[in-house]
Structure formats: C-alpha cells, structure tokens
Image (cartoon, rainbow, N blue to C red; front, side, top):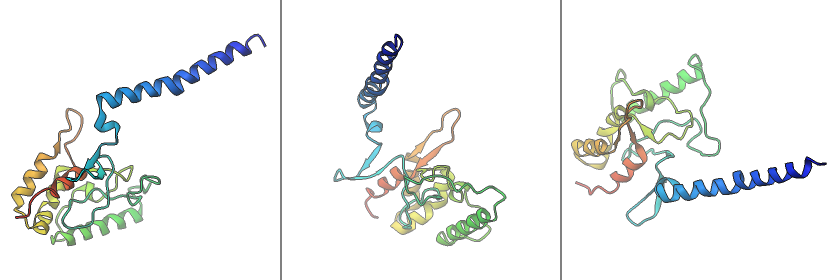
Length: 188
C-alpha cells in the first residue's frame, strides 16, 4: 500500500500532462504558427466556401479537370489504403491495363503512348492529392481542349503550381489546388 498512492499520484500527473497539457500546447502552437495547416489545409472558392482540402484527393472524372492518382479505396477517407496486390498479381496487371486503356481513350492517344506510372498505380493511402509534373503534362491538352483554353495557358498554370521536392523529394503538382485555380480562369 505504501507505493499505491505515490504511483497513483504519478499516474494522474502524467495523464494530465501527456493527455491534456501537452496536446493543448501543441494545438495552440500549431494554430499560431501554422493556421492554414492546423485547420486542414482547406481550399475555398471565390465565395469563401470550402471546396476541398489540399491533402485529400477527390475523384475528378470531368475532362475539364486534372485527375489525381487512382484510388484503391475510391477516395473514401475511412477505409483508405492500398489494394495490397503484388507486382505478380494478375488482378493488378488487368487493373493497370484497364486504367491505361481508359486514359489513352480519354486523351485520344495511340495505344503505344507511354502513360506516367502515377496515373496507373494507386498510392498507398488511396488519397494522394499530388501527381508528377509528367502526369500533369500528360493531361494538359485534354484539360485545355475541354475548357477551350490555349494549351500554353494551362501549362503555365501547371508550372505555377509546381511544388519543388527539395534535396530528397520529387517535384509534384497538387491536383486539388490546380483544379481550384482552373475554376478561377476566365474562359477564352
């Protein structure tokens, strides 16, 4: 019994510090130093309405928008994740072949045209909002034609949304912010 009360007091003190004070302090610091990120990196339209988050992809299917990476979980946030199909899986081979055929058809390209891998393979989370610059370039002509915009104007917009990868990372384009910017362009 002589150790019960000191241990209980220590447990309660640590529970208050680690379960209350520390999370509150981290939340306050993040709200002050990184308010955009602390509130979910939300994207708003001209009217101030939340239309998306920079961090979570949405299933764009219209030719007027850039498409994100495929999702094994249909872009749902709760059951998100990868398909867990191995490189030797016949189902993965069929799925990738179907995605490639659909992309080539949507872009009116010949069957032998190479397609960037990030447009064929789902990400680990199934919610990846970024694509490679090559994947954005692959789609630029389709988006420009669907919006009746000059291709160079769409390419400039893509270049403006390039996120440098730094020393260890790869350059990427955030599809969510790019599509939101597309909606602000006046028609030609």
